[in-house]
Image (cartoon, rainbow, N blue to C red; front, top):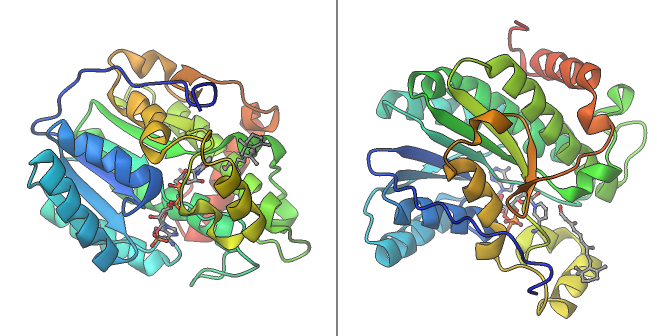
Length: 294
Ligand SMILES: NC(=O)C1=CN([C@@H]2O[C@H](COP(=O)(O)OP(=O)(O)OC[C@H]3O[C@@H](n4cnc5c(N)ncnc54)[C@H](OP(=O)(O)O)[C@@H]3O)[C@@H](O)[C@H]2O)C=CC1
Ligand SMILES: CC1=C(/C=C/C(C)=C/C=C/C(C)=C/C=O)C(C)(C)CCC1
């Protein structure tokens, strides 16, 4: 475990008066990320598709950290109506947003579609967070300096953006669909960072490591692997360290748009470095979501 679990966020930054939002915060890496942000005094929004699960976790975080400012709001990233309703509520009730952690994710789902007809991996992992970020961007700019952390994966190395088959209708493989969506997370981060230059908002993508969590729920093989190797893979708390590092470390602004693993800048695949693909994916995503292509 020691070998596979390096990378600890050593920042001592405290967050009184700051507002943070973590998607998929009711379990796994998101829960531990939210807990640490609450521990440091931020008001933390847990954006969860299952509000009941979220409330249980919010109570637990409040008890452990002594921070009452842990709030649960409904967000289903597989439905753009839910994303818009969430954003509308958040923008009405909250003056600031300093830290946005786009953490929620699904892996290896059987072929299925979101409420808007997007393939589930690209729909939830990429397009859902793309829309959410767009809707919250003005608030992030008004709250600058502020940060966006997109939780991607080492698995992006196996990903490709097939623009002619973005929704997996021509061919589909559940593992590769996950990899493609994680590549999209990195391309989104790069293009977002480029567009945000000078705004005081910076964006980072991360690979959290191989982490014990519910991510493997759709694959009995992966569940078995995770169980067999549970002694050596990261705990969710260890998995949260790189997200926390990117959200908290002072002076990280010069690394805007970079990808991190084990709290260090990490190498990404050739496709993930391709600016033309990043720009095209941005435009296609805007088109699919009915957003203006500025
Ligand atoms: N675990 C690992 O080894 C690795 C994880 N990652 C990435 O880390 C991130 C966190 O994953 P991890 O904690 O491991 O996985 P978990 O499955 O434990 O947590 C995923 C979270 O995402 C939420 N979620 C799933 N679908 C939706 C949706 N439609 N709307 C809103 N929330 C949703 C889940 O909610 P619910 O509980 O209701 O299902 C859950 O809270 C993911 O982006 C994943 O790709 C990357 C590399 C490795
Ligand atoms: C081979 C091998 C492993 C498998 C690693 C795998 C399969 C990692 C998959 C990571 C994923 C899917 C990340 C999600 O984004 C373990 C368990 C570390 C134990 C040591 C040997």
